[in-house]
Image (spheres, rainbow, N blue to C red):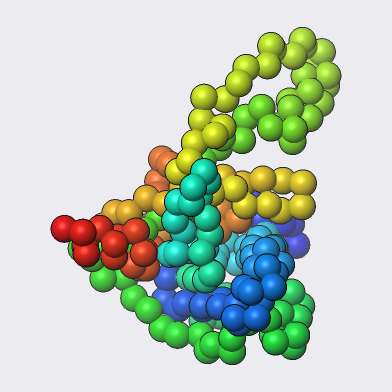
Length: 218
Protein backbone atom coordinates (compact mmCIF):
# COMPACT_ATOMS: atom_id res chain seq x y z
CA UNK A 1 0.00 0.00 0.00
CA UNK A 2 1.18 3.51 -0.76
CA UNK A 3 0.95 6.40 1.73
CA UNK A 4 0.59 8.83 -1.18
CA UNK A 5 -2.44 8.24 -3.46
CA UNK A 6 -1.49 6.81 -6.83
CA UNK A 7 -1.87 8.95 -9.93
CA UNK A 8 -1.59 8.14 -13.61
CA UNK A 9 -1.42 4.56 -14.82
CA UNK A 10 -0.75 1.24 -13.13
CA UNK A 11 -0.33 -2.34 -14.35
CA UNK A 12 -3.36 -4.62 -14.54
CA UNK A 13 -2.39 -8.25 -13.96
CA UNK A 14 -5.51 -9.65 -15.68
CA UNK A 15 -5.37 -12.97 -13.87
CA UNK A 16 -8.82 -12.78 -12.24
CA UNK A 17 -12.26 -11.33 -12.86
CA UNK A 18 -15.25 -10.28 -10.75
CA UNK A 19 -18.68 -9.77 -12.26
CA UNK A 20 -20.90 -7.12 -10.65
CA UNK A 21 -24.42 -8.17 -11.63
CA UNK A 22 -27.43 -6.29 -10.22
CA UNK A 23 -30.46 -8.35 -9.23
CA UNK A 24 -33.58 -7.99 -11.37
CA UNK A 25 -35.40 -5.85 -8.78
CA UNK A 26 -32.61 -3.24 -8.90
CA UNK A 27 -32.91 -3.00 -12.68
CA UNK A 28 -36.72 -2.80 -12.59
CA UNK A 29 -36.69 -0.11 -9.88
CA UNK A 30 -34.19 2.02 -11.81
CA UNK A 31 -31.45 1.72 -9.19
CA UNK A 32 -28.74 0.55 -11.58
CA UNK A 33 -26.97 3.91 -11.26
CA UNK A 34 -26.48 3.28 -7.53
CA UNK A 35 -24.71 0.01 -8.26
CA UNK A 36 -22.59 1.63 -10.97
CA UNK A 37 -21.59 4.58 -8.81
CA UNK A 38 -20.64 2.44 -5.81
CA UNK A 39 -18.62 0.03 -7.96
CA UNK A 40 -16.72 2.70 -9.90
CA UNK A 41 -15.91 4.63 -6.74
CA UNK A 42 -14.55 1.47 -5.11
CA UNK A 43 -12.36 0.77 -8.15
CA UNK A 44 -11.04 4.32 -8.12
CA UNK A 45 -10.33 4.17 -4.38
CA UNK A 46 -8.72 0.74 -4.71
CA UNK A 47 -6.40 1.86 -7.49
CA UNK A 48 -5.56 5.13 -5.74
CA UNK A 49 -4.58 3.40 -2.51
CA UNK A 50 -3.35 -0.01 -3.71
CA UNK A 51 -0.26 -1.36 -5.43
CA UNK A 52 0.63 0.46 -8.65
CA UNK A 53 1.63 -2.92 -10.09
CA UNK A 54 -1.83 -4.36 -9.36
CA UNK A 55 -4.55 -2.04 -10.66
CA UNK A 56 -8.13 -3.10 -11.42
CA UNK A 57 -9.50 -2.52 -14.94
CA UNK A 58 -13.17 -1.84 -15.65
CA UNK A 59 -14.92 -3.60 -18.55
CA UNK A 60 -18.43 -2.74 -19.73
CA UNK A 61 -19.18 -5.62 -22.13
CA UNK A 62 -22.91 -4.77 -22.45
CA UNK A 63 -22.25 -1.17 -23.47
CA UNK A 64 -24.47 -0.35 -26.44
CA UNK A 65 -25.97 2.53 -28.36
CA UNK A 66 -29.45 3.70 -27.44
CA UNK A 67 -31.60 6.12 -29.39
CA UNK A 68 -29.42 9.17 -28.68
CA UNK A 69 -26.65 8.11 -26.29
CA UNK A 70 -24.51 5.14 -25.30
CA UNK A 71 -26.00 2.97 -22.55
CA UNK A 72 -24.18 0.93 -19.92
CA UNK A 73 -26.09 -2.33 -19.93
CA UNK A 74 -26.65 -4.24 -16.69
CA UNK A 75 -23.26 -5.73 -15.83
CA UNK A 76 -19.81 -4.48 -14.90
CA UNK A 77 -16.81 -6.77 -15.21
CA UNK A 78 -13.73 -6.03 -13.14
CA UNK A 79 -10.35 -7.42 -14.22
CA UNK A 80 -7.31 -7.62 -11.95
CA UNK A 81 -5.58 -10.11 -9.67
CA UNK A 82 -7.15 -12.28 -6.99
CA UNK A 83 -5.55 -10.02 -4.37
CA UNK A 84 -6.78 -6.71 -5.80
CA UNK A 85 -10.30 -8.01 -6.43
CA UNK A 86 -10.50 -9.62 -2.98
CA UNK A 87 -9.53 -6.28 -1.44
CA UNK A 88 -12.19 -4.50 -3.49
CA UNK A 89 -14.76 -7.15 -2.54
CA UNK A 90 -14.26 -6.18 1.10
CA UNK A 91 -14.72 -2.44 0.61
CA UNK A 92 -17.73 -0.87 2.29
CA UNK A 93 -19.37 0.19 -1.00
CA UNK A 94 -19.42 -3.36 -2.38
CA UNK A 95 -20.29 -4.88 1.00
CA UNK A 96 -23.27 -2.52 1.27
CA UNK A 97 -24.53 -3.53 -2.19
CA UNK A 98 -24.26 -7.16 -1.20
CA UNK A 99 -25.87 -6.87 2.25
CA UNK A 100 -28.78 -4.91 0.76
CA UNK A 101 -29.32 -7.67 -1.77
CA UNK A 102 -28.65 -5.35 -4.72
CA UNK A 103 -26.12 -7.56 -6.53
CA UNK A 104 -25.77 -11.26 -7.20
CA UNK A 105 -23.29 -13.16 -5.06
CA UNK A 106 -20.61 -14.15 -7.57
CA UNK A 107 -17.18 -15.50 -6.70
CA UNK A 108 -13.92 -14.19 -8.12
CA UNK A 109 -13.01 -16.29 -11.13
CA UNK A 110 -9.70 -16.90 -12.84
CA UNK A 111 -8.93 -15.66 -16.33
CA UNK A 112 -5.98 -15.44 -18.65
CA UNK A 113 -4.82 -13.47 -21.63
CA UNK A 114 -5.24 -15.60 -24.75
CA UNK A 115 -3.24 -13.70 -27.35
CA UNK A 116 -4.99 -13.46 -30.71
CA UNK A 117 -8.54 -13.69 -29.39
CA UNK A 118 -11.09 -10.88 -29.55
CA UNK A 119 -11.23 -8.55 -26.59
CA UNK A 120 -12.13 -4.96 -25.80
CA UNK A 121 -10.45 -1.88 -24.42
CA UNK A 122 -12.42 0.75 -22.52
CA UNK A 123 -10.71 4.01 -23.36
CA UNK A 124 -11.18 7.34 -21.63
CA UNK A 125 -11.99 10.00 -24.22
CA UNK A 126 -10.72 13.25 -22.74
CA UNK A 127 -11.67 15.28 -25.83
CA UNK A 128 -15.32 15.02 -24.79
CA UNK A 129 -14.49 16.45 -21.36
CA UNK A 130 -13.36 19.83 -22.68
CA UNK A 131 -15.72 22.74 -22.14
CA UNK A 132 -17.78 20.91 -19.54
CA UNK A 133 -18.47 22.84 -16.30
CA UNK A 134 -15.74 20.96 -14.44
CA UNK A 135 -13.20 21.53 -17.21
CA UNK A 136 -14.04 25.25 -17.38
CA UNK A 137 -13.75 25.59 -13.61
CA UNK A 138 -10.31 23.95 -13.54
CA UNK A 139 -9.14 25.92 -16.58
CA UNK A 140 -10.30 29.20 -15.04
CA UNK A 141 -8.52 28.46 -11.75
CA UNK A 142 -5.32 27.49 -13.57
CA UNK A 143 -5.41 30.66 -15.70
CA UNK A 144 -5.96 32.80 -12.62
CA UNK A 145 -2.96 31.22 -10.86
CA UNK A 146 -0.79 31.90 -13.90
CA UNK A 147 -2.15 35.39 -14.45
CA UNK A 148 -3.22 34.58 -18.00
CA UNK A 149 -6.51 35.34 -19.79
CA UNK A 150 -8.99 32.53 -20.41
CA UNK A 151 -9.33 31.56 -24.06
CA UNK A 152 -12.65 32.00 -25.82
CA UNK A 153 -15.00 29.08 -25.20
CA UNK A 154 -15.49 26.82 -28.18
CA UNK A 155 -18.06 24.09 -28.58
CA UNK A 156 -16.44 20.67 -28.42
CA UNK A 157 -16.86 18.92 -31.76
CA UNK A 158 -17.21 15.59 -30.00
CA UNK A 159 -19.25 16.62 -26.99
CA UNK A 160 -22.38 14.93 -28.35
CA UNK A 161 -20.65 11.96 -29.93
CA UNK A 162 -23.09 9.06 -29.68
CA UNK A 163 -20.27 6.53 -29.34
CA UNK A 164 -19.18 7.75 -25.90
CA UNK A 165 -20.60 6.66 -22.54
CA UNK A 166 -20.64 9.30 -19.78
CA UNK A 167 -19.85 7.97 -16.29
CA UNK A 168 -20.33 10.14 -13.22
CA UNK A 169 -18.06 10.37 -10.16
CA UNK A 170 -19.84 13.00 -8.08
CA UNK A 171 -19.26 16.25 -9.99
CA UNK A 172 -16.66 14.66 -12.28
CA UNK A 173 -17.61 13.05 -15.58
CA UNK A 174 -15.45 10.43 -17.34
CA UNK A 175 -16.25 9.64 -20.98
CA UNK A 176 -15.48 6.11 -22.18
CA UNK A 177 -15.33 4.47 -25.60
CA UNK A 178 -15.31 0.75 -26.32
CA UNK A 179 -12.60 -0.36 -28.75
CA UNK A 180 -12.91 -3.96 -29.96
CA UNK A 181 -9.49 -5.35 -30.83
CA UNK A 182 -7.16 -8.33 -30.46
CA UNK A 183 -5.81 -9.48 -27.10
CA UNK A 184 -2.01 -9.52 -26.87
CA UNK A 185 0.40 -10.85 -24.26
CA UNK A 186 1.83 -7.37 -23.55
CA UNK A 187 1.52 -5.79 -20.11
CA UNK A 188 -1.69 -3.81 -19.76
CA UNK A 189 -1.93 -0.44 -18.05
CA UNK A 190 -5.01 1.45 -16.87
CA UNK A 191 -5.62 4.66 -14.94
CA UNK A 192 -6.88 4.93 -11.39
CA UNK A 193 -10.40 5.04 -12.85
CA UNK A 194 -9.79 1.60 -14.38
CA UNK A 195 -9.76 2.75 -18.02
CA UNK A 196 -6.99 3.05 -20.59
CA UNK A 197 -6.07 5.89 -22.92
CA UNK A 198 -6.15 6.14 -26.69
CA UNK A 199 -2.36 6.03 -27.01
CA UNK A 200 -2.09 2.62 -25.32
CA UNK A 201 -5.48 0.88 -25.16
CA UNK A 202 -5.53 -2.04 -22.72
CA UNK A 203 -7.39 -4.80 -24.59
CA UNK A 204 -8.97 -6.90 -21.85
CA UNK A 205 -9.95 -10.58 -22.06
CA UNK A 206 -13.67 -9.88 -22.38
CA UNK A 207 -15.94 -10.64 -25.33
CA UNK A 208 -18.29 -7.64 -25.62
CA UNK A 209 -21.84 -7.83 -26.88
CA UNK A 210 -20.91 -5.56 -29.80
CA UNK A 211 -18.47 -8.19 -31.11
CA UNK A 212 -21.00 -10.98 -30.53
CA UNK A 213 -23.64 -9.12 -32.51
CA UNK A 214 -21.16 -8.47 -35.32
CA UNK A 215 -20.39 -12.20 -35.51
CA UNK A 216 -24.11 -13.01 -35.80
CA UNK A 217 -24.60 -10.43 -38.53
CA UNK A 218 -21.63 -11.70 -40.56
